[in-house]
Amino acid sequence: MTTTGTRPALGVDESFATPSATPHLRQQVLVLYLGTSALDSTVIGWTRYDGTGRSHPTTGDSDTPPYETGLAALLDGWRLLQMSQLHPHTTGEEYETSYLPYEFLFERLVDVTA
Image (cartoon, rainbow, N blue to C red; front, side, top):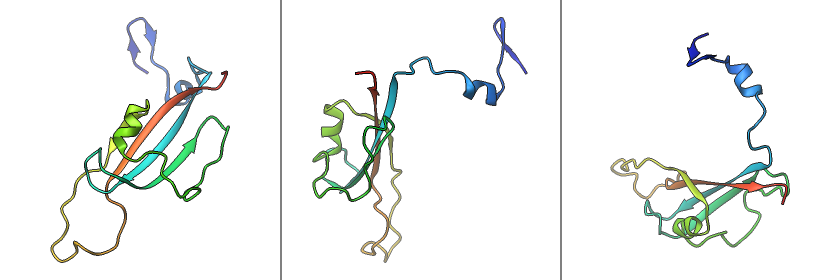
């Protein structure tokens, strides 16, 4: 183990076993699939995960997207964590059905004591 400053560094298991400094906060995750790589394009698919335990959403549990665009989610307080990498289509495969390529991953922290 190495030391940082005056405290010895913790091992991975010890570090992950350390109680949270914010035990009242839980993460909610929102995955939006957009029509294009632009954050202000239309949502065409989505899924939600609720780390608060207050709800148990599943893929396809509603016909209406939670937001019209990725930008609308940002304006509502969601934090953007990751955007999909842009890969060019292979010539001849531009119109083949496949995975949704424009995935945006958002999160927000929710106070579960409220």
